[in-house]
Length: 119
Image 1: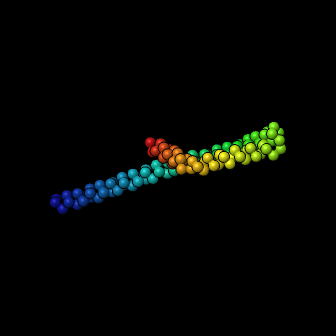
Image 2 (image 1 turned 45 degrees about the vertical axis):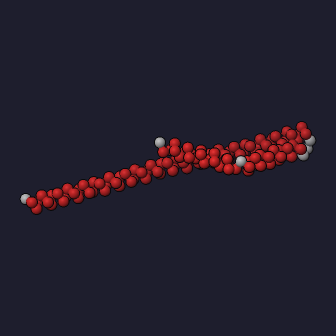
Image 3 (image 1 turned 90 degrees about the vertical axis):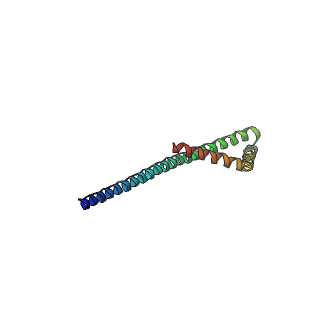
């Protein structure tokens, strides 16, 4: 009887061990799927934002061409393009000088988005 009980206890320990291992495997797979879903959402959002930025840039280029043409008609031939060029160069200078602040804002926004994905 003692040997039979010992063997039975060992078989039960093996079953418990198998159950614990399968539980850890299931938790690992679940975490892997959650991470994959977060990555998929992030990539989809990134693709959408890039597409939106491309379309917005195209619209901006056409709007600037139209503005330059309108200024050319109003001010005379070369001055419309010069005014738009000066405005773009001023914008570039301002953005370059505020580079660190803009990077900080972008980093905070990305962090907020990543935190929102966690919940």
